[in-house]
Each structure stands twice: as structure tokens, then as C-alpha cells.
Image (cartoon, rainbow, N blue to C red; front, side):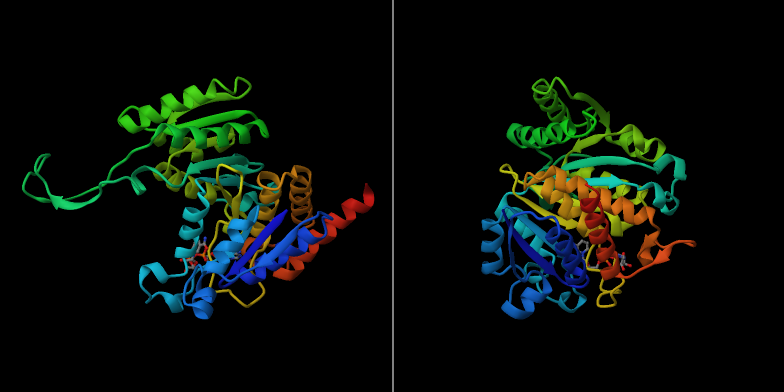
Length: 362
Ligand code: NAD
């Protein structure tokens, strides 16, 4: 197994170091290679995604990514900004399925903006196509309208479209993920209004026939947005397109109350994946040793489950994180009265210690 490790900017280096600590105590056989990405790569090589970094990523089974973004590079042309590295990796590796779990650990339910009983124990997975839809559809642009409500006036326009293979491949990711969970998939669309959505729904239904052991239902996106705040625990896996997924995954992330806890993965057809925390490079706290490394540690667990064929090791990391939270350890972002505040390295050490204790018991 080869893992490309790209720590990136801001808190990236600090949080990735903790995830690597955790991977190293698992007694698994893997090779790692490090490369710069984002602002640090621009500073050293004049590009946020240098050729050598891309080659390392392409040759790896999985990429463990920290975060990119640095205000010092905000003046650069868009193509050279740190954030472009992620888009470049997605494009070059063909990563199309973005997986974002929204998990609310019992002990952190008080941090959510919803009532604790609605979110305590929440464990849902949002799978979003991340390369298609109205975000990439052509034609797009500005023009003078020749029809519509105001012919002769300026207008902006985009194209929403999905091809059968695009919907099929993300559907398979969703059904396969559901098989490892509670075997329920909710496909979210707007089929009552949009042709593209009706097509999406038809293809989802076709693919669903290949998974008779997984229950498929369909929900309109407006209702899904409501249900996510009304009864989020009713969902298992949600699969949706790029536009709806963009919005729903952020909504779901907020249910858990703590951005420092949320991992993510983006996969391609051969299960190669990019694994990163859902948050950014947090320049306001970079270098202070107070960032929460748990989203990155949980991203490493997803990497073991989805790209490296080590689901038991993934389960062990997740159990160790739960144990550390149950023991009352908290980084500043999730701290509440009566718990023990720790820094980035101490949180990583605590997860390592929990894993080693568990190994000693078995
Ligand atoms: P951010 O996620 O970096 O930070 C938002 C807030 O959350 C900040 O107050 C930060 O301190 C806090 N925070 C984030 N992660 C944390 C953690 N692990 N522990 C504790 N607190 C944490 O978002 P932003 O401030 O809007 O963006 C900062 C930079 O990150 C920008 O340059 C942006 O473009 C970039 N960004 C990168 C990614 C990525 O690499 N995938 C994603 C989002 C934003």
C-alpha cells in the first residue's frame, strides 16, 4: 500500500502529523511519500500542484491531505492559488465521488445548534457527485437573451446535465457504502421540476435493482433540507448531485457542531482516493498547537476503509477516537466546562494510547 502524504498549508502540517502517528501504531504494511502542496508548494516550486507532487499522488493508492489556503497568495491569478491544488488533484485522478460522513458523537451533542436528542449518535453519510452537474455543464456564460421573460436583456446561464455513466458510477459508490452500513440509500433530486433530476432518479432506480439488499428511496431536495434538521437520524446514506450535495453536505456538517471533527473522502472508479478533513487551513490558529486533529485522523480511518481494504483498522481508529472523547479530552474548538482541554499533539497521543491499550487487552 502506498500513501501520498500532502500536509499543505496552515494547520495542515500539525494535523497530518497526528494522523501519521496513529497510522504508524496500527502495524500495517504501507509505504509513505511526502510532497508539498498549496501555498508551500507555490513558494518552493512556483505552482500549488507541482509535477512531482502530482506524480506521487497518481502512483499512490491513497492521498492523505491536510489543508491548503494562505492569505499571502490571495493576490495570485486564480490558477496559481493554493486551493487550485485540490481541483487539480480531483481532475487528474478522476475523483468524482465525494463522501462526507456527518457523525455526532454522544459527548459532543451539546455543541450542535439542534437539540441534543435530535443529533446525539447521528451517523449519516452524504455522497455527492463532484465533477458534473450545473457546476461543469456547457454551455455557460453571459449573453443577450433572445427569448424568455426579457428578450433583448443581458442574462447569465448555465447548463445542468448528467450522463448515464456519471449517475451510475456515483450510484454504485452509494449502494456499496450502504452495504457496509444500514443498507438504506436516499437519492436526493428535484424530479418534480427538472428533467435532469428525473433522469437521475430513473438511473438510480435502475442501478438500485442490482442491490436488492439495499433499500432505495427518493426525496426532493427541499424536503431533504427540511428532514436534515427535523429528523437527521432517519437517514443512512444520501446520494445526490453536485449542486444539491454542496448545500446539503454543509448543512449536515453543521448538525454535528464542530468542523474540526469531520473527515471526507473523494474517490475514483478504481477506489483510489483523496482523504482530507472538511475544514480549511485555519490560518488564525496555525502554528499554535491547538488545532483539532480528529477530522484528519478520522479521514485516515476512511482511507483504510475505502482505498486500502483495511476496514478493521478503520473501526479501531474510530473506536479509539470515541474512547478519547468519552475520557473527556477536548481540543479548544470542542471544549466545554467539565472536560479537559488539550492541544493538537496531546490529542493525537491520546488516540495512539487508546489504540495501544486496546491492542494490549486483545
Ligand atoms: P477554515 O475551515 O480554515 O476555518 C474556519 C474556522 O474554523 C476558523 O476559525 C478556524 O480556526 C476553525 N477551524 C478549522 N479547522 C479547525 C480545526 N481542525 N481545529 C480547530 N479549529 C478549526 O475556513 P476559512 O477560515 O474560511 O479558510 C481558511 C483557508 O482555508 C482559506 O484560504 C480557504 O480557501 C482554505 N480552505 C481550504 C480547504 C481545503 O483545503 N480543503 C477547505 C476550506 C477552506
